[in-house]
Length: 363
Image 1 (cartoon, rainbow, N blue to C red):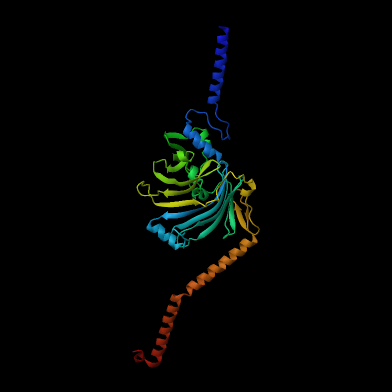
Image 2: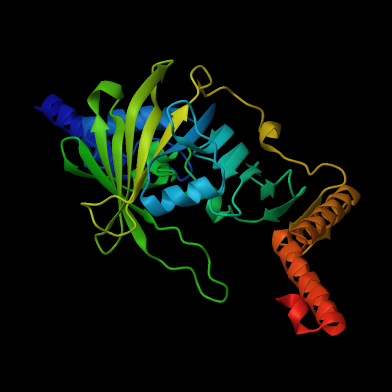
């Protein structure tokens, strides 16, 4: 009998220990799996693939595939190039990224549309200490303490993993909720362009993930829904690639819904990773992400107010000003100027003839 009580006591001790472990949350800052009962097998498989991608690099491009008449006209005005399929090329980047640390380097170009639009080279870089931009055309950039909103909004492959949010903390906090067998939702802060003098809004977007069991349960479609229920974006993966057992989206579309009408998507873009360029967890040195401004360039540090104006920047600024003035002079000496001058000379000649020979000479 004593032996029975002894084993009963040991069993209770083990049960109490396991119960304690089950309710203790994962340590902050770890990517470990939460122990809450909501974590089902599908969610575990998805997160195992997602959390295993600590870094990736690739080359990618985006294209305009669906546009209305007005947007198409704006693209034509900008002399945007087309690929062999007839798609307007919107951007192209050499991309390096650590999604859980939010360290990145994106070096490429963005096509600005409209009458004065052009192919604009731009670099975004952060090694975790600050966030930097640089343009070869302007030979200048900005240093900020926070990531620039345009970098988040411009399409990159991370949008097809998590809409450019890190889901690890959301997962640990139990914020990924099962809606049905292969559909899960999570709420993340909505991002807005800052308005000077106004506090940032605290709105949240709902991300609805449709998982693919054939691709490590990674999302094959992500719907982005505003707090008022309006559909904002749909990111849909067309092709996955498996590298070292990990599945990654390499081709997909982004549908944008500005009119808030689910029946009428405003436009669709296509993102494609260049074949053979994708590397998962390549083990890049942190210095790869560091960007130092070249000699002679200029930059503004928004946090400290520091301004540096280099000699090469001044030279390019002077050349740009001279080119603009020359263009304006050419425009003012265009055909209308010659027509006006011709009419003035004709009137002057007519007046001279009239004064010398009288009105009859003009008939």
